[in-house]
Image (tube, rainbow, N blue to C red; front, side, top):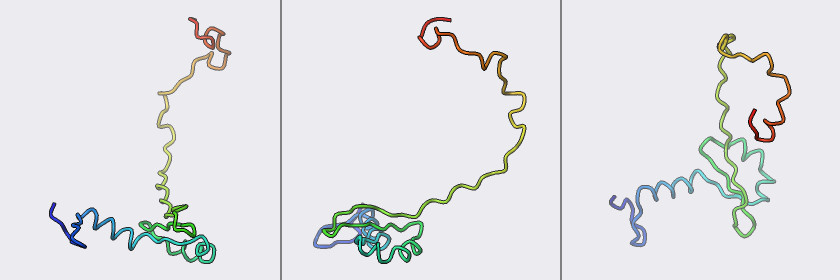
Length: 106
């Protein structure tokens, strides 16, 4: 793939350019103190594609906060769907023989 952008004579691929754009505009790095002061505002403005990186004072990343995926909608349950296809034997609640638990033959 030909270079998309040339910075300091180092060509960037389209993938590298997208990664730079994503981390520049959709990822926000904040300190623990900033998180404590502005937690409500930061979380209220968090969108599906955003990430917040919480970093220590030295800049070392400690945690990543991202929006939770919504749960898929639950469908209406259909009663009787498996009727007649599932059964239990008469002795299903009887204790199993010792040979079952010890790995022997029945």
